[in-house]
Image (cartoon, rainbow, N blue to C red):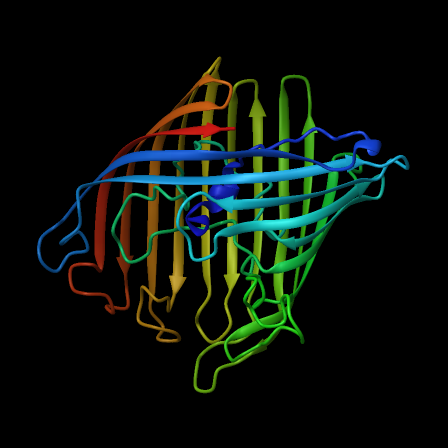
Length: 374
């Protein structure tokens, strides 16, 4: 389930916090996590030859993780700790993230499997809720060939990496990361926990770098958050006869708040390896909150050249993917959230490679959900 939440998942956060123990006590383990559940209906064309054919009208979604975290602050002021995030649902990769960290006046160093600088999605447009977004959450409404407009994706595939975060300098902060191999994020991958170094078969990248800068300012009743950065594959083992190669990604986002009102936008460009394989996604949103209630709107547009939903790599075609939603959420109490959405998605493929009837697709969806954070 980890891939279905952007950033969306990464995108919205879970807030597991553990208090630092006294140095003499050693590292103490705390347990946290979350559980999300959604009931959603999707209303599209279910006749023969269309994407909705043989698809259910409604569904139930659920996603859960259990987080184990421990840290301690040593007598010299250095804070050390570790975090393991265990999927609460059946998954091919049962451990979502696992890493250790050291932090102090020098900043923070993390080593392990975790989100890259873009994947952490430090700045995201308002208007989303814990379960619903106009970009790429688990609850994307629609059966079109493309089911996401992701704006929080690195080109490192959440592989094992080393990441450094600088201290905050007048609102600015820099995150840099290095991934030795994109083919090393699972315990069973070659070179991960046994003899030798990671394998790099055809079609995989290695020596991947990422960097992201953020700026935050809080004024009297207003504030601004900005971020921008990139992710680059240093080397790529190409596949003979395939249209592939080194990839990179670039993302920027801006959010401005005025009291209970917030508005913002985000853009990511994917310079995918090979000819005519690039893509870009742009969107934004706005929200207004008063007491425990928040209402919002969010939307996105993606253009994908020669994508898997189109005619294959390098054919000159492209598809357009769009989504807009209205959202509402209510905080019932600490760690207990209810949310709902009304959405519309539409898709168009110019390459005529999808099945007839799917070249132009649209759907309405409505959903209600909850999130428990513990």
